[in-house]
Length: 357
Ligand SMILES: [Fe+2]
Image 1: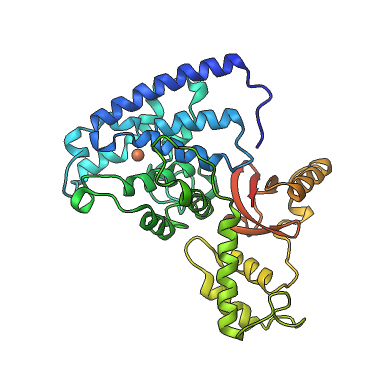
Image 2: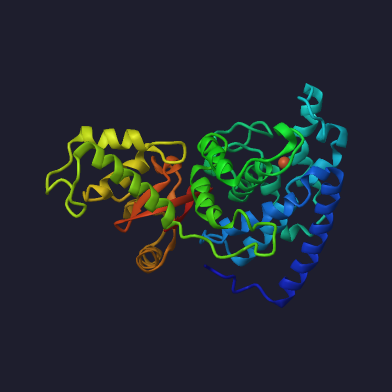
């Protein structure tokens, strides 16, 4: 994980001050809407666990994310608590007020602006497919990644907590909530971040908000290995028992076989191209690189550095031209001959791609 060399003791002291102000502001929001007690803390803890696996998150960025996630609902202070706690459906004019809270929060978060990522607050209800609110604005990888991370954590915590709009007022179990996230992956939520969250959540769901929050996370390989196991299971059904070292005895797989297994594997958070990468890996076929040298928007020394890191580490960072045709939809990519989860962030004509294993 990359650390900021320019983060010093004064930065840490200012951050501590900002963190204290953010915690006070968060408490005010949660006192205003008591059913969200500690919601901001849990969202912030989940967000940090996700960011901890992304090589683009330096220490400074993680600090900013922590504070922004604590304050993501700050704008709710302007919504009357009678609306926030209304048990039935909201009237249109009440919804209009609710939909306004991200803008209000982004404009008025009462913390040193150096430590707030306003985009995380402004776009935390923006959907991956461009829906959600505020209306208009970015979609997909154009949504600030801090907002996409906050959205996954926010939805998970909202459905696992006690809220007035849940039947019986109770939240659902974490395992069920992960199922809900999968259903939202690709439409409301960033599908790769859902996969990343899933790998993190399995061990920590019972702990977040408690004493052991932040315990070590599962390897992302768990997600990819799960997909590989699924592909093997389908292959066995198609072929009967097979030699895992040589499933098709040197024959190239017939296209119908690849298509059939890919078709079975595709679900909300694994698109067809990603499933194809996994299936070809299981079939021991040569993997086609998702990002070739000519796709990389960087100079030669950076390229060799990225490849070197990819060869030796479980995290790598590359920059790809933003018009790369497959990038916006792929979760499992091939880079340097290996399978990786891929999270992108658009920035001008480039996309910064975090690769994680
Ligand atoms: Fe919100």
